[in-house]
Amino acid sequence: MTSLVQLAAEKESADVTDWAARLGWVVGLLLFIALVYWLMREGWKWRGTLQGDLPELPAAPDEPGPVRLELSGRYHGSTTAGQWLDRIVAHGLGTRSRVELTLTDAGLDVVRPGAADFFVPVAQLRGARLDKGIAGKVLAEGGLLIVTWEHGEKLIDSGFRSDHAAEQAEWVETITTMINTATTEGTAR
Image (cartoon, one colour):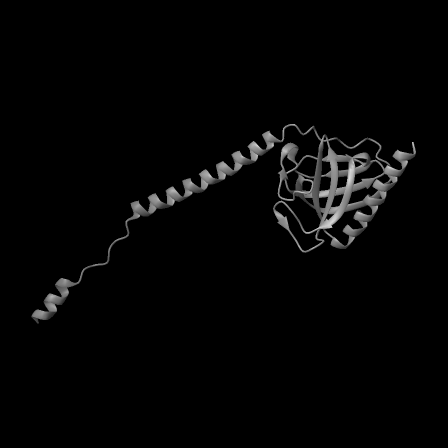
């Protein structure tokens, strides 16, 4: 009997959870996450300030001419040409969004719901290709339509992904033909 009493006396209850300490850790973690998010946002704004020399984006003309091609898909951002990780954020070019692209004789009209629209005149188009990535987005080889254009003194690559990937090759051919035609007409004058 004595051993049962001793055994009962030796048993202790389990430690109770220290809710104040646990709550302190959770609040601390949430504050740390908020700080990291704030620092990322400030970095994004600083990058936009550094790219402040980029002129305003042109708007589409009233009469752009007949439509050559149309595309519905996603806009994945713009980078400095040839540097697929150097994202451009000035004037909203870093904002991902849905996109409606229209190629006309006047140029490339980029309509983005929820973000700034812009227009690339045919004289500023420098090239088009299929590629696998642009800052923040990597797909299978040929998964992105990259359009290279000149704005101010800067060459820019803009990345688009069509809802129907098979039509992207036609865009490359048509833009290349337009650039070659504009170059030929420019030298003939």
